[in-house]
Image (cartoon, rainbow, N blue to C red):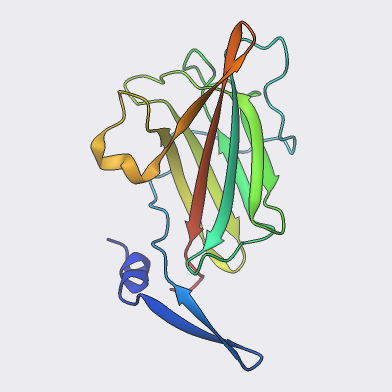
Length: 183
């Protein structure tokens, strides 16, 4: 277990004083790192709409928030996203985004529901960075996927099927928890 995770676990409640006002902080465990995988993240685009009408595969609407260990939004966090296409293949110029979290720490992306990449369960890679927090390099999986290993349930999103006439789409949500810098 990383030292930063141990530090976050050692205290359940932290008191912060901001301009003379004391706030209780219910400390949350930081999101676990998994590593970047063998991928180049340099080709991400600032567009949050990666899937477009007519694209192959089923659309996936991903909504997420970036929070600190007290549950406060990390506004302006840089979020780099990368995943395989619907067939499990990585394309250098598709299915990559480089976006910023808004003032609520929220971001959303419309993309394609990824296929299986080799023997690994369906997943999406993330690199999340902010000057006041440690960089997070992880990947998320889908709880409904039978290939998800029980050891990664904390990194698995609930996947909800959304009918779209004769077709279907998907919605998934997650809250990333970043460790403050220097902890």
